Image (cartoon, rainbow, N blue to C red; front, side, top):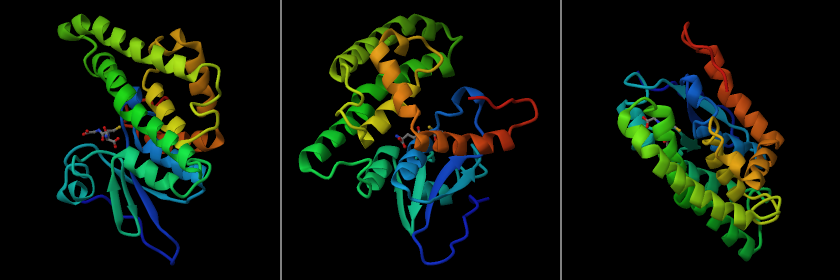
Length: 236
Ligand SMILES: N[C@@H](CCC(=O)N[C@@H](CS)C(=O)NCC(=O)O)C(=O)O
């Protein structure tokens, strides 16, 4: 069965974002539609979610692959403009919001640099650790690999910590670069690694205290609570 499409009504821009109907508690609050929801909330753009199930029923259908070539969440549909990759979607949204994207050329370029830094210089190292801790915690190879993975993540975080210094945000003011960076740092929850860098832990907390983040997180979690299988208690 194809994902249920939100009905298209009226003449206003209709934005639809894919999200999972339910995921295990260990990844609740981390699924990458959170970034898109947060950007939309910061930009004040209304949207509708369309929920898909993991697996063959929705996620791995030709209809969904046509929206997201890898069958992943999030996919984004804005009046027929279909996008995938959370970074690209968030950039697209940020172009319409001074809260997310400075208007001066230098500020824009710097914010975009931090977006790419979050996704290509920090996230891969943190995801390597999540693969060990979340997806393969009991595998022998994971136990052997973990110290090296932790050391690499710590190295990048030390460099990020030095760059942030005592600033509130990476460029002094909040930008879309902070939105992506803090969602990447969030993947480290459940470890004590971020706490080894007090300015980064405080930075993540500052970003997540934004009302738009809180609204986005609540919106992602609501379906998980509603659709939890009988044995699973949703927490985040
Ligand atoms: N680079 C992609 C990654 C998307 C991604 O990894 N999505 C995960 C959820 S956070 C997913 O759909 N996983 C299920 C799968 O890969 O089958 C993006 O940033 O949008």
